[in-house]
Length: 205
Image (cartoon, rainbow, N blue to C red; front, side):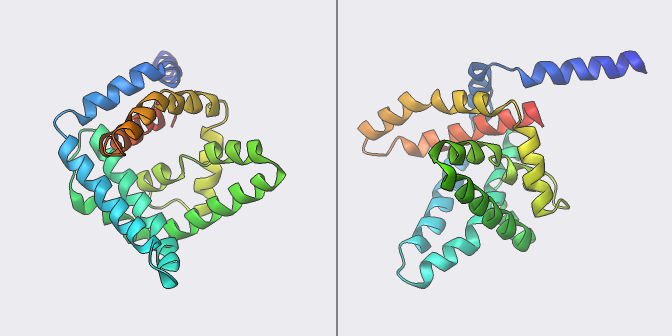
């Protein structure tokens, strides 16, 4: 039993240090043959979220209310994608099953990041990385509470913020290329980034 536990711990240790280059390769492998539906989900997500955002008055309120649940649904879809499970467009709306929890987590995350940003820009950025796993955590465990999800994200990202920053930086040149395509390239880049981030989550959870 002791040897088994040691092997499991060693495997977890190695997973936490999967090179970012390999995480990107895993993302491409997960998206292979699934680009179409992944792009469709992202487009629908952006149309719904951004669509309400441009409506004067109540549009901003509606966007605030639905952003959290939509993010939980989006992350639920991506987790199923990388785990080889069944995926579908309807999964984007799965977060509305835990509407209050998703909304509460989203608001708390924004508040905490804002409060840290009051100290200076850098603490705000660090806080954003610290709470970046919240929607993955809720998508993975519907029974977890909002504050518990924030705490768990903060703990998971202890010692891993720089790794996620470096992973994000690897997409910088892709970002510039997408600008040269007048933004069309982002249709492919956004699923790629989040899928790589999902593999990052799997490696540290």
